[in-house]
Structures are given as C-alpha cells and as structure tokens.
Image 1 (cartoon, rainbow, N blue to C red):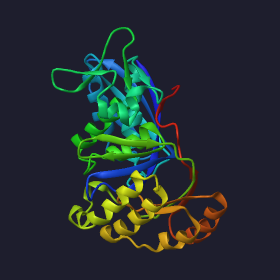
Image 2: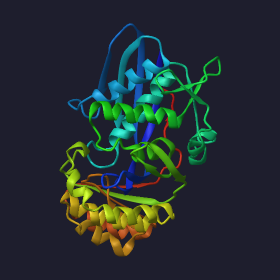
Image 3: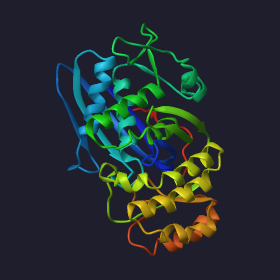
Length: 321
C-alpha cells in the first residue's frame, strides 16, 4: 500500500506566540512525502535532504493517521524538501501535511479539496462538516465506500502530531492551515479554529541566513511582551491588510527574538510587506517582481541563501509516487 503527497511551506503574517492568534501564507517551496504501509509493522522515517534529522514528527503523523483511519498498519515514510529545516519557513507543517495526505492515499481514503464546504471558515464556525465525532471526541469521516477526509481534518492530525512530538509551542495551526489549504489564513491557535482564508497572489523573496532557529526553543516570555503589538497585527490581518501586518509583526518579533531588523529595513521601501518568518531566522518579503529584484541585490550581499518564489494558492495535494 503506497501513497504520495506534496505540501508547500509558508511565510509569516502574524506570529502566534504572543497571543495565540496567528496568520501565515503558503509559498511555492515544497516538501514531498512517500509512504509505504504494511500490516503489523512499526513505523520508520527518513528525511532524504537531512539524513541525520529527527524523524519523530513524520513517524507520528503516520501512526496517528493509521490509528484513526487504518487497521494495524505500520511502514515507512520518506520525505525530501526544498524547504530548509529550522529556517522559519514552516518545514515541519509542510512535512506533517504531506505525510498525513500520503498516508491517507496509501490507505485508499479520498481527500477533499478546497471546493469542499468543510474547508471554509463559515462551515467551521457553524460545525457543518462532513465529519462526525467518535467516542473519543475526535473527528471521523462518515465512513462507507465513499469514505473521505477533508484537508482541514487532515491538517489537524498533523498539528496533533506536532504537539505530541514537541516540535511546536503554539500547535502552529496557522502555519499548518496555510500549507494545507494554500493562500493566506488567519487562525486562533488556542482553539485550532480557522477564522479566515483568502487567495494571495504575490511574488516572494526569501533570505535565509546560515544559522538555524527551532520554534520549540523560542523565548515565549519575550514574545508575550509584544502582545499589544500582536493585537494590532491581528486586526490588520483580519482587515485583509496583510502586507502592513507582516511588516509590523516582523519588526516586533525581530526585537523579541533577538534578530536584526536590518534585512527588513533594506526591503521596506520596495515591498508590500516584509517580516521575520516564524521564529526566524528567514526573512520573507512580498511585492512586485521588479521591486523585489532591488531587494535581492541587497540580500545577496549577506551570508546565506536568497530564494525567489511566489505564493501558493493550491496547498497540499496527493501526487503520483
């Protein structure tokens, strides 16, 4: 039983560490997952692009998905990625989403896409989804020959796995929904509630310095100190002013997390928005291509890697192995 899927990374609009409210947008850097399932076996994982990296998250994603929808299966999950690990570009969310979808694919369970009503914030708020609660309170699909899972349900499995394995402080529901659904999302990470999702079409420039930063190691107390600013950013995001929200977020959280604001200040005159992404160290700018080219010249003078890409509106999806 084999399955394969792909999920994009994401950039930050609002870091959820301060208040639990978060916002992120999908970018066209991808993680790919292949899953092979066998009856009565354990779960092993491999990250091709980082052979020494911890595989607990992707293994837990397989286990949780099989526990919920399978029948005593184990097997192997292998991922590879364009997204740097611990770079603030949501590599963990992308890996979790791709792994969950690949496992569902291996189990022969269909995954509903964005036309499904239960992926909309309105449906989430009203509780009108195609899933039903099981005895443990967790979502279950309605079963039968037409059994299927919405991407939002699948996303929550990955978030649960991230919490179980300690790779995230907030649960990263904002990052996970942006990666899974595409576009830009605003979420309440304390309740894992999707508040809004919109299509976002922009060119994107990313600078990733050589150092790495793990979100689980972030100074939560210092981030909590910028809560009043985060409230302002949340309102900007809810109003659809994502570029302004990014910029205010980036300056505030760069100070809270000890990163220089200089890369953002270099970009600010030329872009629609620029922010430290996640807990760093990457900085992400969005805008028009010709303006981003000017920023690229400045950022390429810095140590690290500069990536030119664009926003992703499709999100995670099943693919051919």
